[in-house]
Length: 99
Image (cartoon, rainbow, N blue to C red; front, top):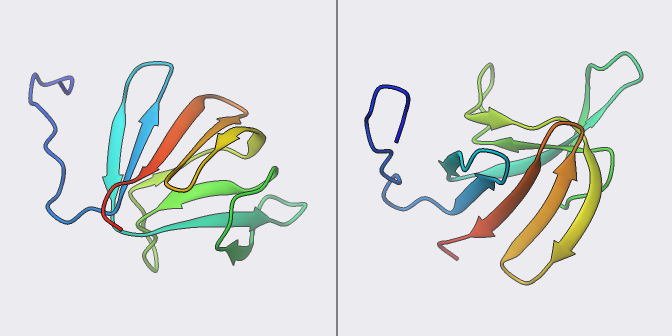
């Protein structure tokens, strides 16, 4: 449930589900990418695969996005359709739900 008491319903056809372990927050999205950063913390490049030091971005658009994590500090577990990772702030599980 959201802060307003509204239940979040997954978007039909969403390809990814991101769950934050700390508080159970769930984010759905159609596209993801992994952002590499310059030393001055500006965007450097977009990667297709996760790695320590990158941030997960969900539904990137030209000037907007649905969710952006802080940088990955540890990849805890990874399978064919999921990855569990720790960032500077939180622990997440990303699941591929529509592939």
